[in-house]
Image (cartoon, rainbow, N blue to C red; front, side, top):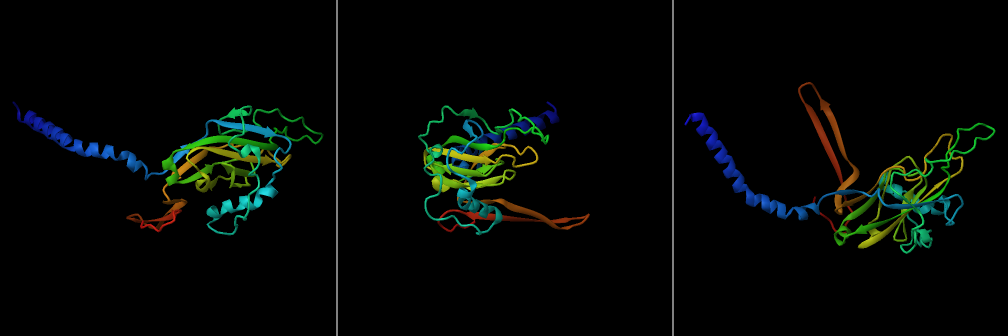
Length: 271
């Protein structure tokens, strides 16, 4: 038997022994994995399974001027300020039937996001001034979806991330006006936590586009992705990670990392 064969044999035997000795540790790690998953950030695609209806006349007596004071505080987290404060009292729209869990939306169109309600036409007939053959982007659009949450989800902070919706968005969860975003070309985030419950949660989003609101085709509907984000009360803030390189040379570089952490819980935490 050659020396090289003996060396390979011993190496394989050692590798097998190491793997066998590691099995208890691997089994233990696997056993605690579900618990470790509770500490992670979940970003869930909720694009599928929406109901949609478009109205060319106002079906709900709402408008941005009515909703504005409850929508603008949604920007505070984005601008890192407290310029806008949510008014006291009952927010508008709480009695609108489209935000209620018992409203039957079975006759509404079934859609998946991203969705542009005007893209399928028809084109408007051009006027005497020519125009650009506009698609029917005007009107009021309502979207509805049921979110199912487990009891463990209620221990998290829950955000709704909307990558793009045209325009003047207003969002309700379980009949409560959460907030909104007026501009159609920006993404936005809303905190669903105070309004969430175990089981089925009725999410409703209202959009409104004025007639001839743009010289180009502006888009219509929730035309980008929508996400449900679940994080622990102590979590890295959205857009809260900053990397800079204050000193760079051919030989070396200094990299600085700054991280902002939010605590949405009621108790102080050591980070």
